[in-house]
Length: 289
Image (tube, rainbow, N blue to C red; front, side, top):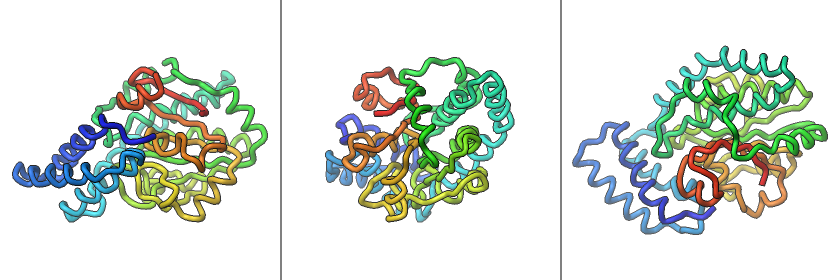
């Protein structure tokens, strides 16, 4: 996806929200917004929003003198999600007994995608979890997913946000129970509240499956910035699961991803993506494009 004009006010809103989290003064905020406007003016609109966002967040980190401004928030998100893990596992087990373990695991993974500080939204994990097993998805490509699973021996699972990783656990377990190896990919360094190796370890993902870094610090997949290891895994994977809107924005219509069997799991969180997909804001998606 290319950067849309409507992305610009969203970027500025992210600057304001992050500055508030970091405790910048009102006077400092004026300077940050001015610097952000200069950066926005130099954006290449052909690039997807997550790629352009890196320069904005680098500016904020530099101004704060902190390499990982969202570290505390990521830790809190992971702790809160881990408190819900017994309930997630109970829901997954109940669905499995009813013959829909895979569908339930996908739904739970999608539920975790409400955790996102990169867009101007609030979230209620308890509320989302209450309804996720019943809510209709705007796209549900389970039949094709199940078919491809039968011929696969491993899955590349691209993670998204800290805390959300806990909601990926039932799906990882379901895939492993079907005899598939799972490789879980995380960001190459701190960016917003996205998952890195540290958060993957804190959530328990690293005890379930192999975790690798994409080598890319964008809140998405920018192939030019990815490691050779990740690119090799991406190019050879018989099946890829991509979590989150940022990964969708960078992978959709990317040349390298054109013939890859990618299934996207995310909640539509902004009007640009909503209009692009012609799906309502807030839609839950599990789709292959």
